[in-house]
Amino acid sequence: MIRRHELSDAEQEFVRPLLPESLRGRKRLDDRRVLNGIVWKFRTGTAWRDVPERYGPWVTRHTRFRRWAADGTFDRMLRAAQAKADAAGDIEWLVSVDATVVRAHQHAARARKEGSATRPSAGPEAV
Image 1 (cartoon, rainbow, N blue to C red):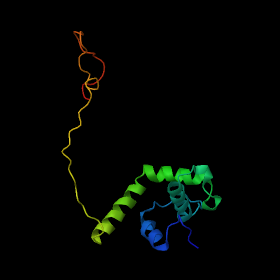
Image 2: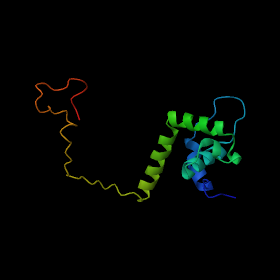
Image 3: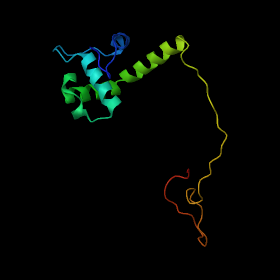
Image 4: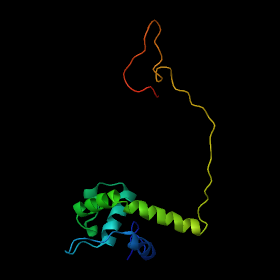
């Protein structure tokens, strides 16, 4: 039974080849179970420790999330999903350029104060 925040079979088959393989010889928790826990955590906005135990220990989910984020696994998933959607014509690559000017306050630009002969000299010159 697929729960509300879990990946469908089709979604799981899509991401399976994008997940890194375990380099260690010992058996580890199933990637699908851990990934469903990660998805559950971010879709609900809860803390790692509050994700239901059916997705495995919270430390395992958190560690695998950090590892996959660091090695680019989630970036590969996003690029593959975008490529698939683009090939199907589901993405419109429309870019909008806004010509509005937003001016910074004079103090944000480190302007000279009235009566002051010099400007403050700490920090970079950019706003």
